[in-house]
Amino acid sequence: MTDSSTTARPETEPGEPTGASSAVGRGPGGRTLAVLLLVLGTIGFGASLWLAIEKYLAFVEPDRVASCTLNLFVQCGAAMGSSQGAVLGFPNPYIGLAAFPVVMTTAVVLLVGARLPRWYWLSLLGGTVLGQALVFFLMYTSFYTIVALCPACMIVWTVMWPLLWVQIVRLVQSGDLPASAGLRSVVVGNRWTILAIGYVVAVGWLMLSVGGDLIRSFS
Image (cartoon, rainbow, N blue to C red):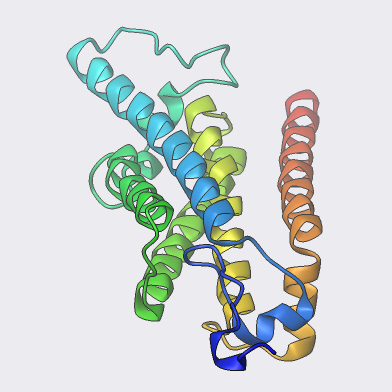
């Protein structure tokens, strides 16, 4: 006869959401989430560092052609030299240099087995939402005002969407972000599909803007 008081309880991964979320399927577990945050944060930090170095070299040597320049349309110089390239009064890459290490540190903390409080997750999500809003603004100005694409900037744009989405999925699944059972089921159960749709929308927006530029150039 087995004593129920000593029955083993299945362990979850560090930081893995538990509770009501189990009824709607598993979102990114603690270790998976940590790896995603570490990879995305590292890529974003690398792209930000690349841009920051290019900005410094452009200041030291104004006539230098940036290493991220491929042609007149795909180049970093136009973005770095525009007013949109310093939204807060200093070069935008410095924001990434400060923000992405926070994401990377969060990932490391999760990997060593720590559990972070709700307020921390919501704060991280809030910062990521602001970062995504800035990305939308920079995408719009790149497509319609500057009319040039910055390769290093596009790397940051690419990682920001999954960085935001995996946090939303984690918080909805855990119940830290209030959501009805139906909405929770849609978000967690279709997390990868919705992530892919976001990229499709972004690429479609880019294609439409490029098409509009070509039409205007020949009109």
